[in-house]
Each structure stands twice: as C-alpha cells, then as structure tokens.
Image 1: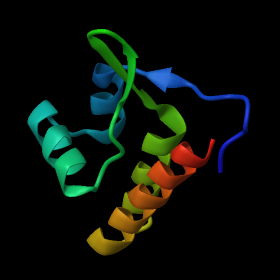
Image 2 (image 1 turned 90 degrees about the vertical axis):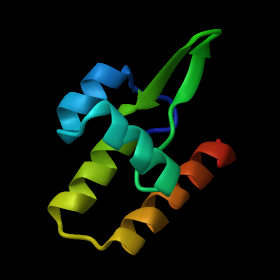
Image 3 (image 1 turned 180 degrees about the vertical axis):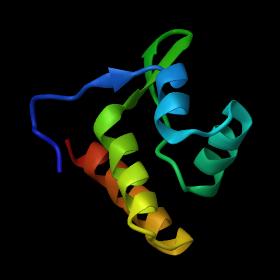
Length: 83
C-alpha cells in the first residue's frame, strides 16, 4: 500500500476537506478507530499520512462496513509500526 520511501503528510484542514467531516467528527472517528490517528511532526504539531486518509475514504466510497473500516485502520497503524 505504501511506497517505502515516500509518505506525504497533510495537516488537519486538508483532511477535513478530503473527508468532508467536521473537526469534532474527525476526532470522534479517530477515537472510534474509524480514522487513522495523526503523527507528531513537532512539539505542538501533528499531520496525517495522506495515503492512509485516502485508503479510508476509498473504503467508505466502496461501501465498506464500520467493522471493515476499523480493521483497515488497525492494519494501517500496524503497517506504520512495522516501518
């Protein structure tokens, strides 16, 4: 799913545009395991991996169930840890 050497980081406003969600809905989705959590890029800054967000948006477009999306997000986090 990922090119080993290329990750594009995006900030929260772009994630909100890509997903069409509100900020509070994004936070709720992160807590529920329906959206990948951001990574720290500084002492007070976070960003999201664009490929992960696109994977979740694609799963929603494909009509995946909530449980399938939770599994996808869990797999994405596991891939992050493996790198």
